[in-house]
Length: 400
Image (cartoon, rainbow, N blue to C red; front, top):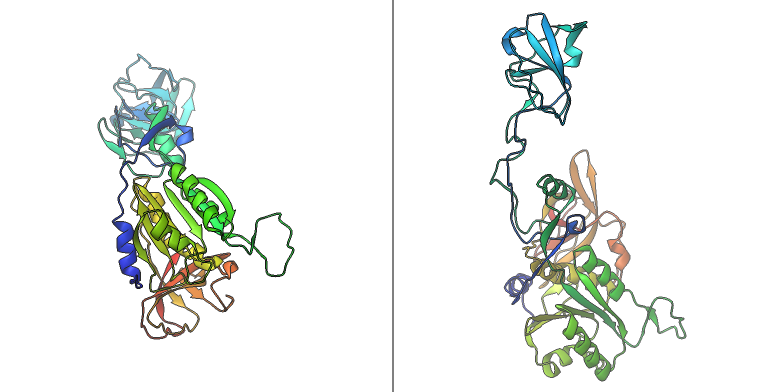
């Protein structure tokens, strides 16, 4: 299968459908970071009655210039039966119901008191410091839309509605594994200079969890067809998405691509994209499960995970995820592209309100340099066959 364009590959990812995206009810605090699967509507007006936004005195606005008799206190949580008549006031507190007969609250600091009488030394407008009925929300108002990732503010709003548990999408399960005879896991001792420390399965687990999924960690799988097939059997029984690194290129021991194509019976959506890094990526679908084979080099696998796997993780949570490019000025000259789309790691900074990017401190070399993504980093996108970018040009980048 020949390489397809980057845009075409994203379109194929976007069209992947999942048969069932299920929901589960969790406690309100456990919903933090989860994705809401229902709309949240107000079941009442809030506040239900006019309330005070400050400590002060409830008066009639027409009595602003009068000496007023204080009838009583009306603390928050109490409903005073006293009515504010002409030339009277009731002391009121933040959150107190505004007494009948009054239409304005004068802050304490604007008052001069003498015994049970007060005078207003600094006037306020009519209706000052009174929260109207339904100021925060009205009965039946849509407050939080389905598909929102729940944060602290959403938690607070639902708590105000007396919601103790809420429906959220079930977390997708992503199975991750690295393949290769040369790879050592964390803690394994190197016995040959040909061995390298494997990071891809750990990095992928971190990215998957960061974006809201549970992870089935399968570790490192040797370049053995039987071992790889057994890994897939385990993964496909439990996970929604199976992601491996390595074994998708054109080498004699690159078994993953052939197992996906010929032994799993999966529908290969594409194998090979005109992109740098990550041209040998393979994406397939088997029933409702998605199988993705990423390149073995760490930078390649990380970038392609962000581009191809993360959107599917969100799709399984009812969210359409799209890259959001922003404009920035480049402080570096960046080479022209050939027939591939290119994603380049850049440092990004905000200088007096202007975003600037640079590759000066990034290491030049192969697609194995994962530490180029450390720090305040973004990815600069260049379409195929575009001219060199000159220092001072405006470019589009995606923050990561």
